[in-house]
Length: 120
Length: 418
Image (cartoon, rainbow over all chains, first blue to last red; front, side):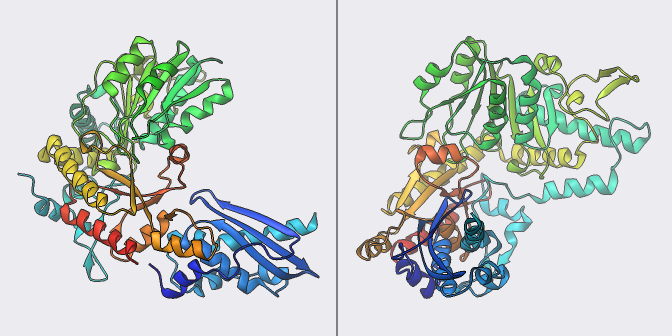
């Protein structure tokens, strides 16, 4: 299924679990798929200092979450929120069919809530 | 003689190749493919007969009206009902909503509606909306084999139960419910009995009996076009119901502040109807009649039995619903465990789901042109009962053969050994 990079990521996610320190906890579910992602994020000076995730769902959503954490780390919240979904999907290690877009974009959708949380 | 090879030639889409290979369509529970005869009937209608029905006096309009009404008669004959007992709707969902909205006025706070845990959302949500009025919605349980728990059904059939609305064949488990028995119980209790027949009328011989008050089904799930559905209602029932939608066509006389409605079924068909759809559905029924509904049922039963035997050989596959092909329709919902993946993840301290997600299964099969459905199948309460987030689902129809089942089973075998 999928390619080696995706399967390897799925079995050995780099960002699975809570980071040592985090000040934001975010949960997102995709009701149509039953996917569930829980992000733990340490924000410092408007930047993603550390990030990790837990959850369950399809291979695409789990691998996407892991890749998302990798790309988000070190960036400002604005930069991450401003990620272009089309670009994000086009850079995914396997082609994403229209029916699977939601799976791949779940972490992006979830992260947008960080800004609301920061305002509170 | 039932010859799938010949049948398949009647379906232009099944000749399509993707990446140089034929497609294996195993999602007829969602919608079916259309035979040339149905496509031709629709084209013929537009090329030779199109006019608005029940209105104009010229020849074309009269011919269009005849086609439309003959289609109604054909649908009636197909299920043992009278022509005037057939209301054309958009689909099963609209048929059931029509009932929810028109029966509502006769219901009061404290009344109850009984459905089951294996209903499609289309037979849940129209009734759930009445909970806002203080009407109670009860769910008869299913047992561990995917059968309806009749004792629980009896227990929940209370004197306040005004409506019993039950799926004939589950779109997930494939379970065929004993609707004759259930309808007798409902009638003894004085309840209105409704059958969601979306998955049964297309797949087996079906006759309405005197205990059925209403029956709903969709044209597109039985080789007909999209956008045409049916509500059967016993004549006296339909006559006593108020209209659902109001407007063109459905009146006898309109004054400034007064209206008298047409007789049923026209009373329920406000606005210009889907004549093309009715004509297409009628052609689909002719096609099915030529095959013989007994033959259709037997064919699907054989395929289901074969696939379930194949699945039984693969210890990674969990099948949901009854084990006996005799008591289930041609739909097989399943999940696949990947033991190796799970074992490896466990060693690394990572929590993975027991099953490979159904969307991953469907995407994997898609690579080989094997088309199955994945997800919750519009039956989320059932998914909660089964304690899964979703399943993959293969379903058969007249044009599937043993090779289709074989390809599916062997592709799933490939996942297991990865």
